[in-house]
Image (cartoon, rainbow, N blue to C red):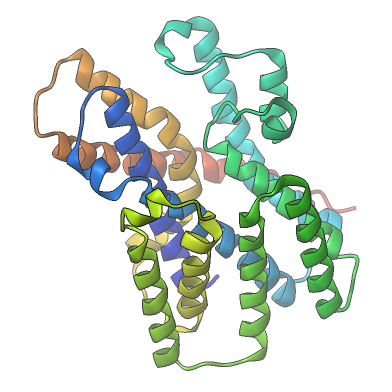
Length: 319
């Protein structure tokens, strides 16, 4: 595993979590100037995740090739257990205390489609875990990538993936599917071309500058796909990071490992935090509350990773 990418995973998860913290503060009437300043900028964590995912799938396949079924099993084993666990937990809470949910309604179609990552195409709505809409795209990418493994020639495999993504774009009009493809190209280039640390660092800095430029409110006023606003900067960031000298920080590496748990559990930790604050009528600086909520969200995600996620993976039986 490339450590720099693990750090970026943690950065992406925290970015998304903080966006949800700010949205949650608005929902519970705790208005902050931060939300009006940075808007939906934290959503770029999703785009960083998508590019990293494309890179990791191709990078891993180059260095540790898997057959299609083995690949599918590894992805399901990584994604499904805690996703189902949290989804089922939310369903049970909804059935017992439906009044505590502000924007959730459930029926059998939504439950089944959510659990099998097809809520958007079947219902036109997001799944039970709202952030799960990104995992539905992730699963589609895994399906396409798994099919490509039947092709042995790597250049033909990449072309096959590209053609299926073009078909997906034609059917869905969703451009950010190509963020996965950018990651695949970066992994292929990384395997073929060696670039020194300094050039990698320059590319990384360019990517970060481009990402920060999207903080400008101008981007909220124009119709431009997130692929161009956040996807391309994310590609520069990942491209530079894989060539930069690897940092060695055990805390950041741990947060990167826990990023999936942080990413999913914030749908529970953030509402809990704000319900607690409003119930006990805690009065303090609203900006400080968002920071405390973010720290609480990270701690909950890390706890969930250490004591639940790591123990839920299924061992594959070899025949």
